[in-house]
Length: 382
Image (cartoon, rainbow, N blue to C red; front, side, top):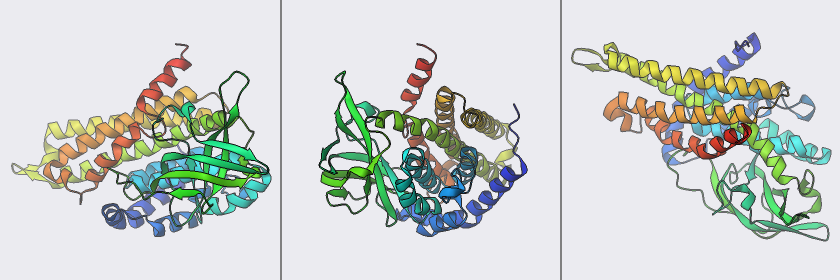
């Protein structure tokens, strides 16, 4: 299997790498410390076509594929994860459900703005008190005439409260199946709908320049036509979305891990100790060599998962492996990069401090490491 990039993929990677270094890097530190959303960066990413990468041109996309998105996420995360997760969530969690399961009318209404980056969308799955137990959804939607009436709440929802957020796709219990289990469906709730409240942004450890909120629905009414996909298929739909999203998160984690290598090499060449650069010492060289090894193997894991997905082959296990391994590597590399930087690694003016704060959520978001192990074990027949 040949994982070398073709000319088009290499050109995309290089253009985004330049964008991350020249546009994102100079300003993201201030956004991070002030906890402000980088609207100007989002606008520029929209002009570059990044939000439309894996979508068909007929819907306003760029006609690329999911692997192209992953390459972009890796390069963005080498500089900053807040920007990378904004793009990842906007594409794989925001626009992708509508693209995969929406009616032609829903696609025509929402996709043009979502794929151009003019608007963002959130994916309302996680709830307070349920966490990894997505089947424990308590948010309910009752059909009243030609409207859904939604009551409940969602937690940790990315891109749900920006000035350009257009909608949130919400999973809700819409009835009971013949076997007595919950019937879960997915419903589109436009921003500004009466009864839909976005709480103030969370005070987070990391990802401080990304947008994350708790959402509440109090007799929130939307048209019956806002049902996304088939009624009762909501659980299957979001499992498909999460399987794909895990590859994207793995790519983001690889980017963070590689960024730790980049910053450590630069610092080790400049920092003097005992009369010479610390990079001359084998202890530092070995740390960085191990970091590079981990980033490289994690990259191969998400490349493999993406290749299987695009080939139409089963990829659930490989996506879980990629996400589990890459997130572990990101945390490991962030810790080692901070150690290499010494006291400066604890100072927010250095990127590795941001990487350290951003890495841990990668072992939690879009399926915890424990959930990934459960998926892998079940796919092995255990």
